[in-house]
Image 1 (cartoon, rainbow, N blue to C red):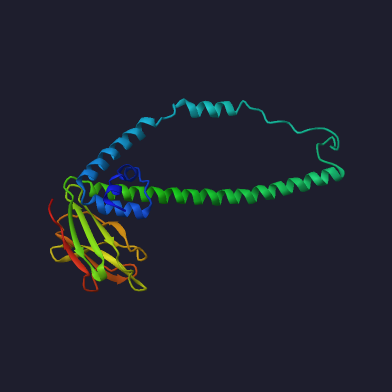
Image 2 (cartoon, helix red, strand yellow):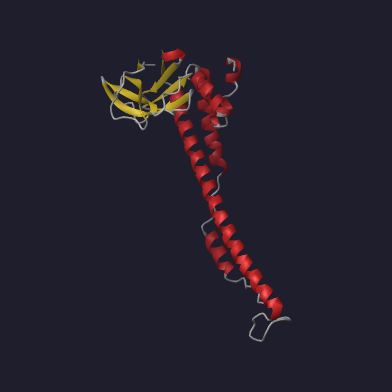
Amino acid sequence: MTTAELHTLTGAYALHALPDDERLAFERHLSACEACAQEVRELSATAARLGLAVSATPPPPLRERVLREITTVRQETPSQGRGTRSGGSPTGRAGRWTSYALAACVAAAAAFGGVAVWQNQVAQDARQEATRAQEHNAQVAQVLTAPDAATTVSELADGARGTVVVSRSVDRAVFLASDLAQPPSGKVYELWYDDGGVMRPAGLMNPSATDEAVLLDGPVDGASGMGITIEPEGGSEQPTTEPLAVMEFRDA
């Protein structure tokens, strides 16, 4: 994707509408393009205002009125036609078929009810996952587009490249990896804040991703930089291997 094409993605990025590969490419571009960063800030603010403008809160009496009107609706009475005894129970073959049909309907309702519950849970999980992804993207964009965002680039092993963007005003940092080899089986890349030579855990990378934008866990505080190491799956409390890179935070 060319630089000219990347310049056109500000609107889609502000609305979280880019596929993962284009989002990562744009975030790398965003860390070095102040014009796009400014445009994303403005578009994000506008989108937020538009979202608030179309929201509507239902009037408080609405729930009470609906519940009140429900009590005035009568249920349809059972038919007293042919094939029914005076007591109202079905008779003969028709009665048996009615009972079978009723049992089948109950069984079908139970089955479909279970499917509906399962589908509702899947949909709810998908909505929650989408919400988490949007929140993550919004936090990454907040760091990348901050007026004091400062970028440091470092060459990693095997031609990979790491870029860290830090914003002291937002108090967060983002690490962007490009062409990073997958870690060995049972291992994971772990990120660290460098607090004056003391490494503080700052999150794990996706072991199957070669290009990724990671919002480091926790605030920057007084960290002077960050590091990346290969650790056992699940991460470590302290680095157990030599860092692939230690990158100093640069001031804007």
